[in-house]
Amino acid sequence: MKDIPAYMLDVGRAARAASRVIAAASSATKTNALLAMAEALDAARGALVEANALDLEAARSDGLAQPLLDRLILDDRTIDRMIEGVREVVALPDPVGAIRGLDYRPSGLQVGRMRVPLGVIGIIYESRPNVTIDAASLCLKSGNACILRGGSEAIRSNQALAACIEQGLVAAELPVGAVHLVQTADRAAVGELLKLTEYVDVLVPRGGKGLIERVATSSIPVIKHLEGVCHVYIDDSADPDMAVAIAVNSKTEKYAVCNALETLLVSAAMAPTVLPVLAARFGQAGVELRGCEKTCAVLPDIGAANEEDWTTEYLGPILAIRTVAGLDEAIEHINTYGSQHTDVIVGSDYANNRRFLKEVDSASVMVNTSTQFADGFEFGLGAEIGISTDKLHVRGPVGLEGLTTEKFVVLGNGEIRHR
Image 1 (tube, helix red, strand yellow):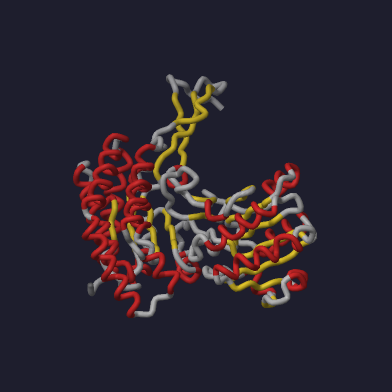
Image 2 (cartoon, rainbow, N blue to C red):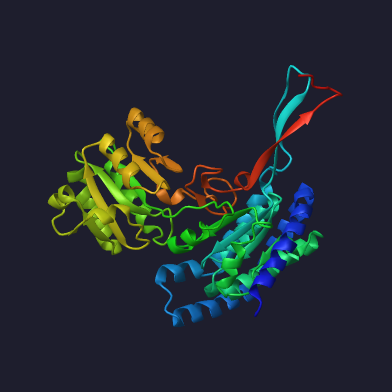
């Protein structure tokens, strides 16, 4: 592809035109498209796995890091999860057109707010071919057109998935421009996408910090999170067995995800009880531990943590551990070093749990469960288009409602204003 600027401009124009059609589409039409997409995915399993095998082979030859290779895998289990995600999105209420707060004003007018699509959403992502389906299904259901730019390492997988999406759109008689997969792996396409201010309403980057920082330079609004420096705090009141199970699962269930545990905080009262057990469990899992001075006093065989460890998203088998005096110090640590992504308290003290929920300034704050549950699928969103640690206009896993906005609607009966 020689003229990438012209190509991306055409993509933007087509997406804007399609966005007007999809915004006006009925819930039944969107449902038909999604169900046809799910059926196409099921029927294309062989082609999907074959395309993915080619991507994996090329990625290994190029020396792609193991965390990215893990995200690239597209197998029957992944396909099942994608299909289930699409069908869960189908089952969710359609947010478009819902009106809230329609109340009478002294003037006699009724004033309320209607939920409407954002318009055209550009999604830029690395590896993770499942994002292609998650993004398409959520954007379609919420009445948005989308431009998908996946990573070069997944281009064959994404093209096979895009073919399934197109089948769904055609079956529902919707414009295929409603979901457009960028057909070039040239990085210049990303730069051109960031310039489409006339045609793209929101950008959503999903990938490493470098990608997200680059996308954030665009003048187009961005829904993003930079890092997932997630914490588990084991309170004085925690059940030791529960605390160990939650900490281990939060870290080891999957390393290369933004909701994986990166810093473990343990109250000084619990440290002698849980740290030796945790060290043994993490040792069995091959996790390298780095601790503060107090932690190393209990676990002398582990490495010493430095200041940088408290702000590092490892995305791998490394865990920083800090022993704290109690809840106050834990909250202070999280709000100082965390990335406002996901943080957990393990404990049975109701007052402490409530304080943690209120005072920890993160997008997802949890009690007595694993950080790995911070996920749109697990939160009942059907799927997610990403995680936002921003405060405007959406925070946490971004599902259907996060892909819409509101406009005021006013109903009158001939009222005239006199100042």
